[in-house]
Image (cartoon, rainbow, N blue to C red):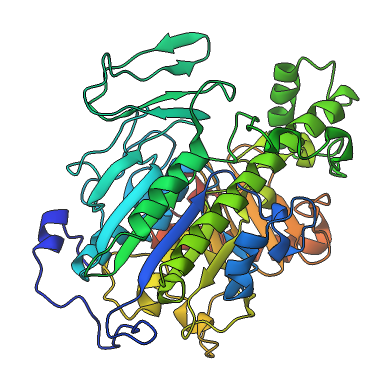
Length: 502
């Protein structure tokens, strides 16, 4: 299908519903509300619904327990900007344009917000967008918000900890955003907040404040359903959180992953680990001090997750008190995971499952049965068509992802059990299947991990002669996929084909 411009799409013929009627709200004739709760750099192992007992997340768990848990959900790119673009457009990073951090989304992309606006929804967003290029914080205006009509509290990027909301007319309305040691003070419009990295600064903790805004929007009286994208910038670094969460998890009780001091890493992973070791000021990757540093960071990380869970609880209770909880499709997910010492690494990206596999939970009584478990491999490009398919809404026609709504309905369908890795460097490409994680890295070690028998991913089978045929088959599949979606990675991947033909 030829790509439509945003103007062409929004000017297309009427009729937001497909031939499958939209799901009605329980006891009402109108469509259900939709609430997306989206966190940042949030690993699935922190959540009780995935078997963790470390943090305690009863409120987030409730969404999955009373709805569906996707057990093999992977982001297609494990870094903020490209992952968020996949989620909101249903398209791969090179297609939506924001293939690495701080690049803006193509202005003609059709987002979930556009689709819900076309279907008669009131759209809004609060929190981190990270799809508008370099601006920081970059508070949105309707001209830049890509379909979100209520965008007052939608900002482009940044991870502040404290906020003071300034009323209109406040003197010297400026942002105190500290970048390293430099204090920058860009002029802000009236009513914009004063934000600071320092968790001990005056003001409200940022996640608490954003939740206030989400509750305000979701409980507002209105005559139409809403689509709201609540994007929480935690538990992303910096590793700090306010009281009582900052002392809730003693560092000495934090478990250290078995792979913190792993020896036999692929060359690209060893290089990344060694850069981190130098930043930590450690003597080597074997330095025992690394475990102490990890425990301190992990305690703060868990505190941020607990803060998120408590705020999710506040939001769910507000919806319940307002009579909207069971008439709202609630989706919880994250843009990628966080290495917390696995393979000696921190932060994101790289290629291990730790960064790519994250939570995906959905709840909508009457449409999704409680206790539904989705074992199939589903990717972030599949989210947009899945939400629209579940609600019976027309799709954009540009999506590259698949509609997994039949899986939510527990229907038998043909489903290719694979999620494709599109790395932000454009020099790494791979695939997740139920059995394997496989990835090719230009000029570096290939990886093949047995997902069923080696969940910690310590045995790279790529050079094992017993798995030569598996490597060949998966290489061919990765090349074919990149050819099908016209990925720039094909320029180097095609050289790996046995025939040598591109």
